[in-house]
Image 1 (cartoon, rainbow, N blue to C red):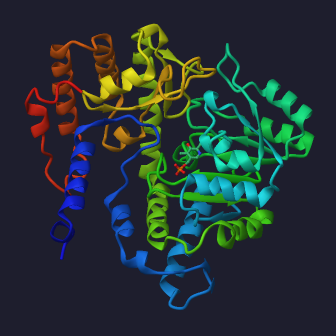
Image 2 (image 1 turned 90 degrees about the horizontal axis):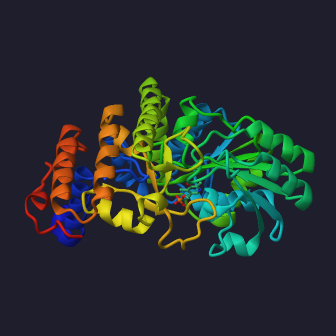
Image 3 (image 1 turned 45 degrees about the vertical axis):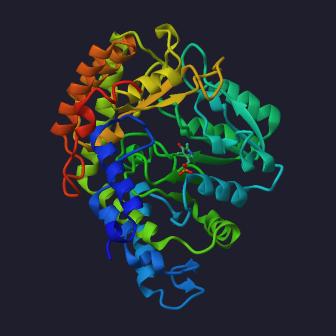
Length: 428
Ligand SMILES: *Cc1c(COP(=O)(O)O)cnc(C)c1O
């Protein structure tokens, strides 16, 4: 029996989600569209297999095929990033970070990470997380005028607080990172170095952004953002940390690895090793620059001064809108983005001052610079006339044409657009 027969409710929800993805302009920078090959590995019988342990050293029998899968995933990841050791078992970015902290530190140790409103991630010690209960997080910031990481402030905080670990890698910061300088500061105060490259991994392995892997003790990432793989995490480290990292992931933190997911990671890594992936990553960045330029022409305020990657954090204060209002207004014309805090945001996280935009997902669909210029125009039109139904209708029409021009997963189903025909959905 197929899913549609055994469980029509779930089947319908999945079909509706496929349609939503096909019909929307996806600008959430942490999202992407993986290949059909990745989806196929994810939906495979590997989900049935227990394989606690690591290749060649498992607790269960019958692991010859999953050993092949995990060996390939590790070898390809090593090649992609030039890593000495890789662990592909972390279930996602958050558990990868937790494992990395525990591999290097003891509870109560001090971690120097980026202020959360300046682009740090929840898992870098937000008070609501388990990590914040277990470690002592202190924070450096970006410089208000240049928008860049304030390396002098970072050095001063490191000297004063003697952290055991210095953490870089962000979820909203759009500039390049000087890993050499961080390493130099860390060496001066005897701290370990960790980079969380969840957002920019695909740009790094394509050789387009600085790579911390050869320099830092530990580098964590997700596999589902610019890397365009399945939802998951990964840890890369120096050979001297290999045993400690592996022990901390399993049995320290997790049980059986999700082998279907690891297979899908391996497939994505193979895709990322192809020359075409470099073209893809280059286009992500070209699109981000074109998007930035046109948004600036429309007088949107780009935080951190500019983008060097795929991300744009926008302060909407001068537009008379909050991040939440903008997100809802854009949703109504099927432009998907997320509200986001800006540095030292005076507003609260549930209704902050900004929105965060990114180019990876629509670049996967084939968007080039001119498409992102048009999107910037449409965002401007929508946010300038939030209550104008005619303008909204006009924007929706253009978005429908764009999504038709660049089909997503045409092999999976035909694109239905009944929801765009009537006026019923015009008001959010
Ligand atoms: C997305 C992200 C994570 C968390 O990943 P999950 O897979 O959602 O747990 C961690 N760190 C950074 C910098 C991220 O952008």
